[in-house]
Amino acid sequence: QVVLVDNTDSANGYATYLPVNTIVIFVTAPEGSTTLSLYEDWNDAIFTHEYTHILQIDMVDGLPLVLRYALGRLITPNAVLPKWLTEGYATYLETLFTRGGRGRSTTTETLLRTAALAGRLPRIDEAGGFGQRWPGGQSRYLYGASFHLYVAERSSEHAWIDFHKRHSRGVIPFLLPSKQAFDHTFVQLWKDWRRDTSAHYLAQAEQIRSEG
Image (cartoon, rainbow, N blue to C red; front, top):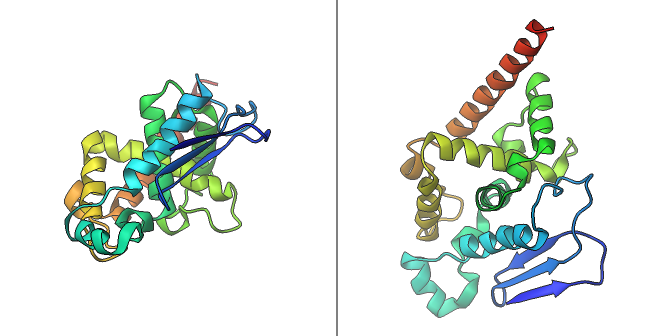
């Protein structure tokens, strides 16, 4: 079900799979000063993001599907994925399937460039944005989307779908099948993303300096 909320000036939305799949959309469009500001149609952008959560989190197969028949919707393997995977994936798809999206936002570009030039791109254990370091909770969306785009370009768009399908069949929480889906662990992929992202922006800065 989809619930539209019009009694607030906040631009946001959320999705839940309990007790039933539900998407809540705050219909007020975001202001230009926020990370959400790059969109063509706000309702399309936020629905794409939240619907991705439903498709991703409520994906259940194999033994967990059998257990769900007995224990209900509490059996949802993909619900325990790290925030940089759930929010990063939804932000990645909002970028892929709309003409806006935070993955192509100049705000995200500025964040990545500034962090890269300062040598402060986050480690994988910092990707959730739970600490005091700026941009805080936005890290899981912005850095997460950049990481998803990087991995998709290096492997394929379908590799992410394969990863979520594999994880939805798993019976051990937090055992991430990245090696099977991408041929590398997430720790290695994140290190590669940090290295290549830093190299890109350092080269860009050097070119700008050389051109005066």
